[in-house]
Image 1 (cartoon, rainbow, N blue to C red):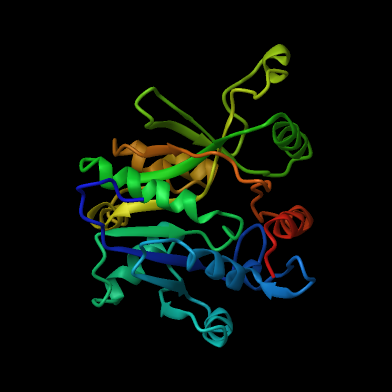
Image 2 (cartoon, helix red, strand yellow):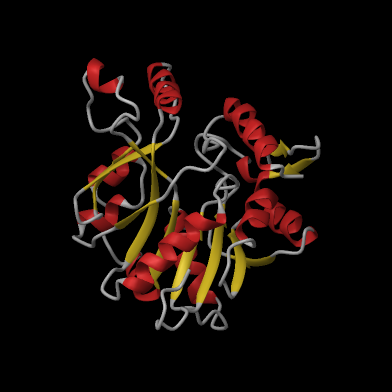
Length: 275
């Protein structure tokens, strides 16, 4: 929600989707069943979640795939074709913004194509974070893990799979580091705390227009390359990333990084009551 006495921002959501995912080729078109057993492509479920966010002027899908374009057009999405050379979702959002002069938004939300389990209030929280802090350039949400989710993330890590991205941040709610490993290190005793001191990063971002367009001119960092996390480029170049801590929904947030992730995602959709 926009704070009192503050003008509502002009916001657009861009959903970057590429077909040739390194870990999961064709992921945006993977079929995911809802509560009633209806299968829909992942990109459609992400789009349907995005359009529920309050106060957003427009929602767009940015892709380099004609296959994804055709599917997205079929369910009524506005599609922006972007170059195959876009190295990640942030770069693809920037490319889409440059191609469409009619998108006049001053806040751009990068809604990852596999963020179908993201509740609208997560996005509203990061938009509010930028609205309340005029000097902030980027905001992204995080939730504190509960015991069950933390144990699952440990199990995924031990199996050599990526179960999610963790984040550590300071008292000013600005990120210190993001990792696909579980951070910070917790002793066995601290792992048993309820909840453990571990925060799961939710891969959606709100950027001020100028920070998004600046991204493509910044040199990638070695940590970004090692981790495969685009947001580390901002930290490397001393651009703060604000963290909006949000309360977890009734369902478990789980990223679609591997085909095996479809089962927990479909279980979450049942709890959500998604068709």
